Length: 247
Ligand code: IPE
Ligand code: IPE
Ligand code: MG
Image (cartoon, rainbow, N blue to C red; front, side, top):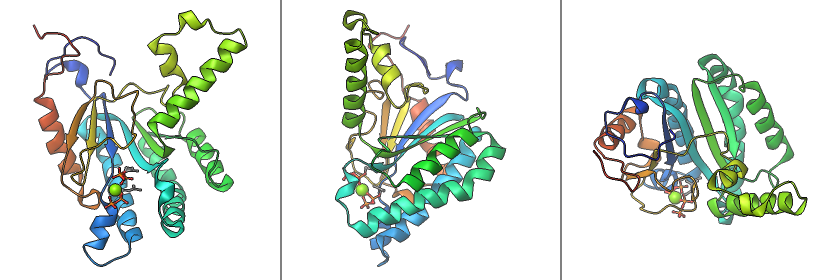
C-alpha cells in the first residue's frame, strides 16, 4: 500500500491489499528439538509456505514476501546450503501448476548471479510462467541482503549518471526504489519474524522504513494461517502515523 498520511485501523485502503513480509526463522531449532537433521525443519517449513500462500486471499494479503536465504547464510555447512537450494527448486516445480491456477505471481529477489544456472533458469521460467497473474504476489528472497541490494542499486544508478542518462541532482527516493529488486512491489506494511529473535538480519532495509514489526516466538515449521490471522488482528489495532498526527 502506498501511504504517507496517518491511517486509521479500519481504513478501507487496507482491504485485501496488505503487503506482509516474513523472516521465516526457527527451522533448525524445530528439527534439533526433535533430534532430527536441520534439513527436516526446512522441508517442514516449505509446507508451511505452501499453506500460507494458499491462505493469502482469505487473509487479505495481496503481497507476501518471504526471506528464504540471506547473503549471510552461505556460512552454513555445504550440506545445508545445497539442501536449501534443492528445496527451492523442488518447491517451484511442485507448486508451479497450483500457482498458475490460483493466480499467484511469483518473483525471486536477491542476487542470483552466484546461484546454480539450472536454478536460475527455473527462477526465470516461473517468473515468466506466472507473469500474467495478479491475485497474490509471492516474492521469495534468495541470496538476498538489504545492504547488498542497496549496493547493487547504487551501482546501477551511478552507471546511469555516468552514461549521462540520469541527472544526479534529480535523484529521489522513488528513483532508488525503482532500482531495488522490489521495484514492482509496494513497501511492506508489516514484517513478521518467527522464532523469538528480535532482529532484522539484513531484510528489506530500504523498503521497511515505515513497516510495523511483529515478533512471535512460534518456530516457522509451527506457523499456520491461523497464526498469521492472529498477528494481522494485532496489526489491525495499531495506528500507523507515518510521522503525522491522527485526526
Ligand atoms: C530459517 O531457519 C531458515 C533459513 C535461514 C534458511 P533457520 O535455519 O535459521 O533455523 P534456526 O534459526 O537455526 O532455528
Ligand atoms: C534470517 O535468519 C534469514 C532467513 C530467514 C532466510 P537467520 O537465522 O539466518 O538470521 P540470524 O543468523 O538469526 O541473524
Ligand atoms: Mg535462524
